[in-house]
Length: 419
Image 1 (cartoon, rainbow, N blue to C red):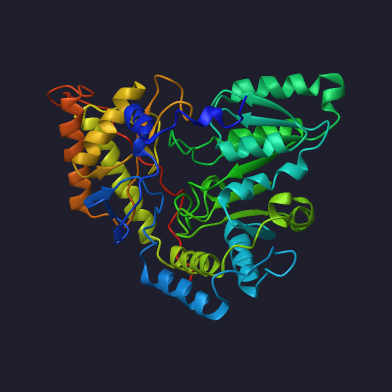
Image 2: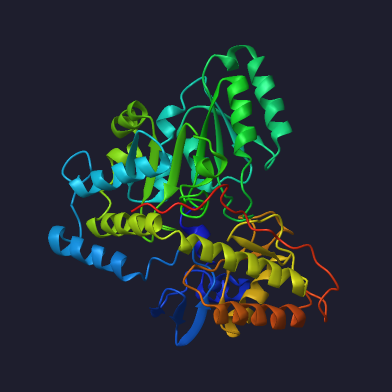
């Protein structure tokens, strides 16, 4: 059989018939990071993770332009050979200090930052993973040689059972143990119970790794993420630079000896071209703005709370989220994609999440606003959801008499400005 035969049915007509044409839509132009042109239609972008609205910030853009003028568009090699700049090291020092760790390593993507964990996962080791972790964490485990045990999402009781079983499982307890979790879960928008995870880790001799892609820049008094929010320091932190840091790339931070070991053992670092000068410079500039302007965090959290509660007042279900990741339940694959299309026609671009990203029957439209969105844009998003939700029968014809309000997660302590 031809190995490519499986691809034949995937025609443009097939994508249209199955609703998959909503993905990979090309943007013609963007406007202030909040709106975009899609084939002649201008819509509000409510699907971006540029949480602090820094991708359109002039200081970030100019830093990227200046880096291209100085270093060119590419370094033509890996960091290990010819692609390492002092600029990379400056960003690594800044991120390490920001995240409260000794050292950091910058990668070309957030996905690769999580793949960096693979060399730590050897024969005899065990990994305990939250069922809702990002797929890149799953890939890291697959690349390693450790055995994996998945615990029900956010269920510390189940995790404890697995850890106890591993403690008494004979040869299986000869290696190390690692607990993997997202800080903020990218679809559900809830925050991990880091204190509970670290307490269990201490009790069972495990290490903890947190993927802070969606909480870096958003949680904590200075925006350093879930660890800072809870006043704790996970053993390792990974993250994407493509969200609050308005660039493309990834980072892994931790003890200096661990980061040094991974530089020389992780294929995700050794066999990839270096992150481009423009991306590194943009992230560095964004980090400076993030630390100097905490009002951006206040703004995105305020907008998120108003979005959650505006949707809930209309009768929508936004699940357990208490963050700017707002999952709107629209159960049924066809219905979810149909609602997405109606919203797009109404001028709002959301992100449809269907199986296998989520369980069948738990389809959601993920909605995110950034600090750059205006109050008027928020109201237009809510108006579009109200109209489409009623037409599609997702919400009742009139608003419910009452709803359970969402109190967005806030910093535990005063917001801190770092100059």
